[in-house]
Image (cartoon, rainbow, N blue to C red):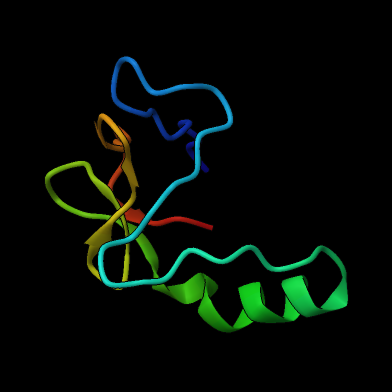
Length: 76
């Protein structure tokens, strides 16, 4: 198994909210509800052939640009 961290665009602030175009970014409180939500959507996280991390084909974005990874395929 290969592991490579996701890398935000240069200049992204630590702890910055990651956004997805077309989705309202409301926090979900931690606890069982949060883990149940994640388990329903985790199969939709991928790094595409261009190296961009995405959810259902929509890139992970910071205020200064997309998040990348050198490995392609499912993010697990």
